[in-house]
Amino acid sequence: MIFRQLFDPQSATYTYLLADSMTREAVLIDPVFEHARRDAALVEELGLKLLFTLETHVHADHVTGASLLERRLGSRIALSKASGAEGADLYLADGDTLAFGRHVLEAWATPGHTSGCMSYVLADRSMAFTGDALLIRGCGRTDFQQGDARQLFRSVRNRLFSLPDDCLLYPGHDYRGLTASSVGEEKLFNPRLAESIGEDDFVGYMNNLGLAHPKLMEVAVPANLHCGRPEREEEQSDEPDWAPLSYTIAGIWEIQPNGLEEHLTQVQIVDVRDPDEFSGPLGHIAGAKLMPLGSLTSMTDSLSKELPVVVVCRSGARSAQAAVLLRNAGFVRVANLAGGMVRWRAQRHAVRGGSD
Ligand SMILES: N[C@@H](CCC(=O)N[C@@H](CS)C(=O)NCC(=O)O)C(=O)O
Ligand SMILES: [Fe+2]
Image (cartoon, rainbow, N blue to C red; front, side, top):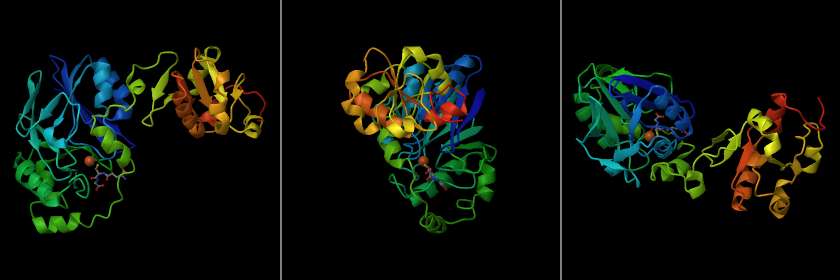
């Protein structure tokens, strides 16, 4: 079997690629939105056919890459029926199986972190992908998304711990850099769920974690309830090809300084800083039109809709907002200069005015 463990440092999420080395059929467990490009590239470079993306649950800390990968690679989206998510191709219930080539994954309902959590267990019991039900020497929190500490205790102790001791465990996250564990290890050393610990002790532990909510929760949960589909139609459309752009979770296309340098003659540059910044020490990009953010919407008449627009500010933050305003004003091909003038200069691109 082909097996790769991928990581998102932002949310400490693991994504797992499993494939049959002969038939090249693959599944990807818990892809992350921002890494859809990376994951698609890996699938393609390894010559795999991605059959399914699988979710262990509706994540609260990152948006799934399922929808982006569906668009890029034609993969289908699977997750538990109990997740409550809309728009999947396959809804799994406890005991369902999913084959990729000669291998089979079993879906095991392991609720408690969320009510819809599913673990995926290789039919030969050599590996289990536990999502946030069972983490290495820990477990997922139970204080939101219908979390239930008693249910989680039973999912782990009655179900996951029924697997052979040498079954390798691959969690949904690890915040300290550990990558895998085994059932035998967790039975002995998990500080919350080891076999020596009782249900009431566990519940007491979980009720006193005192964790802040995940920073992205308000964005991630609604997006994941739609399998990570961008809300706006144009954000779903194929990637723009007028320059090398990357798409951010905030829904904005970005261009790096090198990409802009190569396309300077084919775009309109709109600098949304204040006039004194435009003529200040950072200087500006030759040909840039000064349209301060506060007056941008009243100045768009002088822009052509035929040419793409690249918006620029000092650091890339105000211009991200400018990109949203321009898009709302009907400009379809808009990109934000990532890192703004600061990065442009740091990477030694030419400026008009400014000081060294
Ligand atoms: N600081 C993190 C919090 C991450 C978090 O709460 N993760 C959940 C999984 S979605 C969890 O159960 N964490 C368990 C823990 O941190 O012990 C963020 O903002 O994303
Ligand atoms: Fe989670």
